[in-house]
Image 1 (spheres, rainbow over the protein chains, first blue to last red):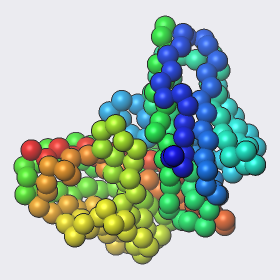
Image 2 (spheres, each protein chain N blue to C red):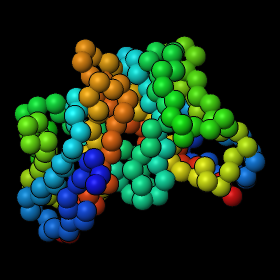
Image 3 (cartoon, chains in turn yellow, orange):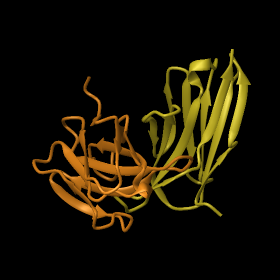
Image 4 (cartoon, chains in turn yellow, brown):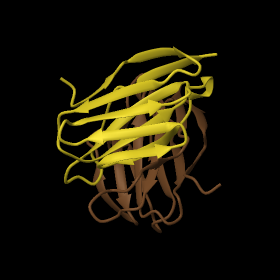
Length: 110
Length: 116
């Protein structure tokens, strides 16, 4: 079993739909990152969370430390949101050990 | 642009040649990380620096790989005698260490290496 699991692996939705991507982890962490990667492109950091909820534009990220679960939500989705969304956790007591989820490939159709 | 920049963005080389990648982090960031990502896989940690000190190096990094950050600002990653298995995207990230954790990571666009 992977230490960081994301679901779904693939998600196709229509423009305007509310999107949820989930991340569950089984290790102790000090922070959780949500990242976005476009095909052939680099990685963009969306959020870093250690508790609670953060919002940036149409993106919302939440984390429940007790349940070891985080969600990334996209409201009013748009085709430009199409990308791979990656959850990565920073191991507790580590300065660099990031464990990456496999990513969720999101396609938003116009 | 004050983000993390990497150069070159793409490099095609013949097996056996040496290549060097450069990463310029966000200026006030004291930590710099190198990752490698192969097609369809998540990024693998290679090494990281705090200021000019290389604090950790992955076992993935063979003797053919070396990284430096001589003045605690930009960093270089050199691969000697490249092999086809070195073909990957090399990602650089930087962060500002705050008390308790590593700070938010900011990634560059990556340097894609193709070894023929």
